[in-house]
Amino acid sequence: MAINVRARGISIPRPDTRTLVGIGLAAVAAFLVLWLTQPTPTVPILVAGSDLPAATPISELDLSVRHTTDATGMVTGDSPGELSDWVLVAPLSAGEPLLPSLLRPPEVQAAPDLLALEIDEAHAVLGRLDPGDHVDIYSSISPLGAPTETQLIASSVYVVDANVSDTSAAGGQVQLLLAVDDELAATLTAAMNGGDLNLVRVDG
Image 1 (cartoon, rainbow, N blue to C red):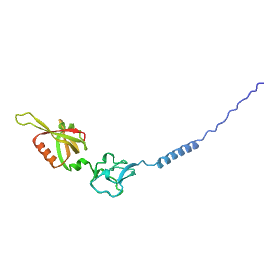
Image 2: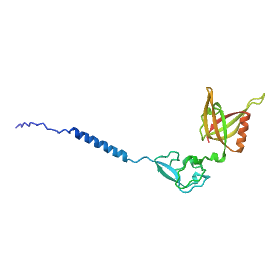
Image 3: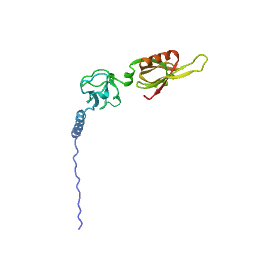
Image 4: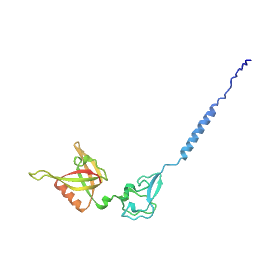
């Protein structure tokens, strides 16, 4: 026997505008709470684990790690890494952060004096020199009536600072501060006054 079933329309209530606005505001409020309460990212920095003496390699110092939200001007990371051979040049009290300005590379410890050198960028790797680079320095002398003589006068000289200044359309001048000792300073000074210099960037 066939039975006819007639479905009646089902009425689904629609939320009113106030309900929709309330739901939206609640979602926004929840997002703001999550955003405001999330932890601020921090950066690890190296600090003195105890009172540290000057003139000591970093690898021999008692260092600790602290986290901060602003590491501007500090040595970041959880280990000295490439700075292990660098030397602390001023005492540091326990808890104070390690600063790059307090550190000197071993090259500067071995050659503690500074020599200023200004040279055409065409003779200085087109000016592509940065602090921390090492350069070999060649001197070329042209004796009267004789072929030009070129010789290596200094090897792996440490560049403390480097700057390129434009002087004309033809090129600029590279201004360098080099780490030297007394003997190297005398050699380079004589070479600057007696011939043309050329720099070659080399591995340290």
